[in-house]
Length: 80
Image 1 (cartoon, rainbow, N blue to C red):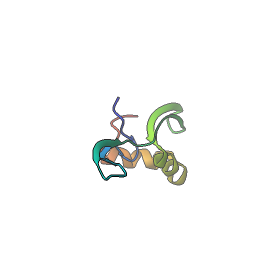
Image 2: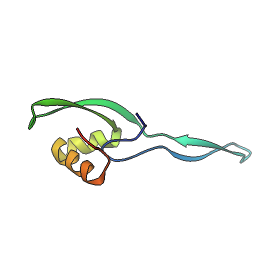
Image 3: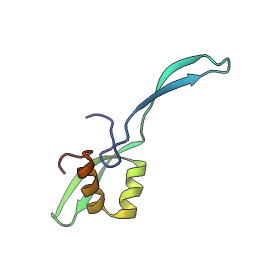
Image 4: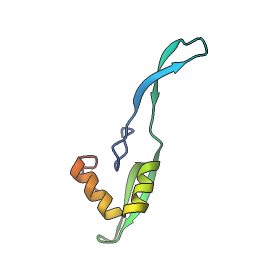
C-alpha cells in the first residue's frame, strides 16, 4: 500500500538536502503515518486506517464518522 494518509490525503513531496556549502541533492519529505484501528459504532465493527498524525488529531476533533464521510467525498478513501 502506498504511503498516503487516508484521511487528509498527505503524501510524499520532493525537495532538496542543502549542505553547509549550499550543494543541493534531491530528497523526499514523507508524511508521519500510522496504522491505526478505530471502532465504528454505527456498523459495530473495527476499521483499520493508515493515517497521519494530523489525521489522528482531526478524528479526535471532528469525530470518526464525519471525517470518514469527508475523506470519501474527496476520494482519499475508497471503502472502509
